[in-house]
Amino acid sequence: MNGVAYGPEIVARLAALCEVDPDREVCGFVVRRGGALHVVPVVNVADRYHALDPARFPRTSREAYLMDPKEQLRVHRELEAWGGEIVAVWHSHVEVGAYFSEKDRADAVVDGVQAVPGAEYLVLGVRGGRVTEVKRYRLDGGDFVESGLG
Image (cartoon, rainbow, N blue to C red):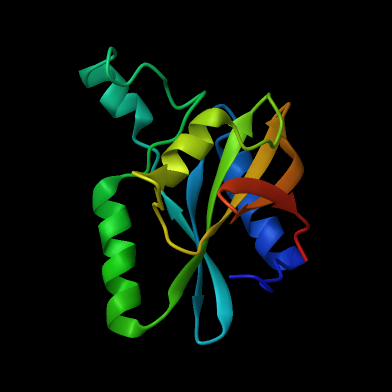
């Protein structure tokens, strides 16, 4: 996925989605179809799982994201049917900055394999209801490193 440039229109779309719901982590994918990038929001179901089993899912949507599994499957099936690929997984952080947390790292790799192979991760820091920073992370040599958006 190296070489993907997240232009101002993609960053603006991501920021707008995060600012509509600034008290919760907002999440989704950036997909490439026909050479163009598209932002695909996915519902954060962390609150639903937390309510059902708070011991197993201790975090709410304010401090974590959990993409709706049915929506994820829909996105994967659409990309398979129509062509395209996921180039990035994105989510916001509420009032703590745009860093790639230990939980983000743990969720991005399952049994030593990247959960969304080849995808980068975009984290948007939301403070006071506004996106104040956007950072890009990619897997490099077994660890996630920050790189520029362009």
